[in-house]
Amino acid sequence: MSSYSTSAIILKRIDYGDYDLILSLITKEQGKISAIAKYAKKSKKRFGGTLEHFSILNVTLKKGRENSLSILEEALLIKCFSNVRSDMVKTAYAFYWTEILNSWIKEGEKNEQVYELLNNTLVELNNGKISSDLMNIFFHIRFLTLSGFLPELNSCGVCKRNVKYFQNNNICFNIKDGFVVCESCKNNSSGSYLISKGIINMLLWINRDDFLRLSRINLTLSDMKNITGFLESFSIYHIGKEPKSLDFLKNIRNY
Image 1: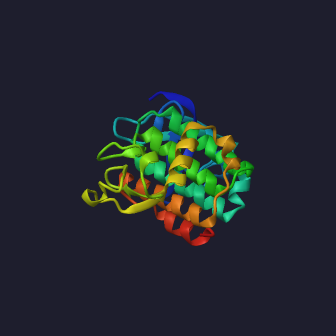
Image 2: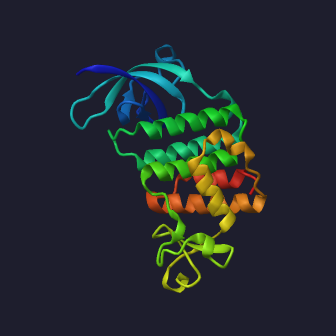
């Protein structure tokens, strides 16, 4: 069984027996990997507290036999995100994002862009220059783009009329089919979410631009609630399950 080293972010960790941990990792080179860290709970010297949720590591893994777990041989802590861990809301967002990716990414499926998305989002969340809520919006938009789920927001999904010609400011969005619906077509659609033209334009802008310019965005509490609810509902629908961490997140953030 050959060994190799790679950068990795811990998406999930669960206890296994009295001494071991099973880890779900997203790696830059190999995609998502499940690995067992033997005696991780018993020996403090072996991993030294490095195996914490959403930490970034350089790991050495030994490939297991077919359909078996890889074995974690070594782990060097690169980033622990202490500012995130000291803030309850930031920690909740980090758990939520990693749970979304763990649910969506298939074992062994390489996606370097998704790895970089999580890495960069966690770094900016830790830096604190952009609000946690805006980083959450950015994460969702980029995740939906990379996963191929990004909704059609430029035109009506039924008649193809451009959004700028819609008469109403509040626009019906079809969660199931992933597109907006104009006034003339909404009776023939099962759309169940209302979003404003302003929010649509902002989402399109965020998807085109660098996230470092997110600090220019100034949203009212009502708009933040509307856009976050829309993105979370849409993402959950297409992932197929609601992350357990979302309930806790909803209870502690300020909207």
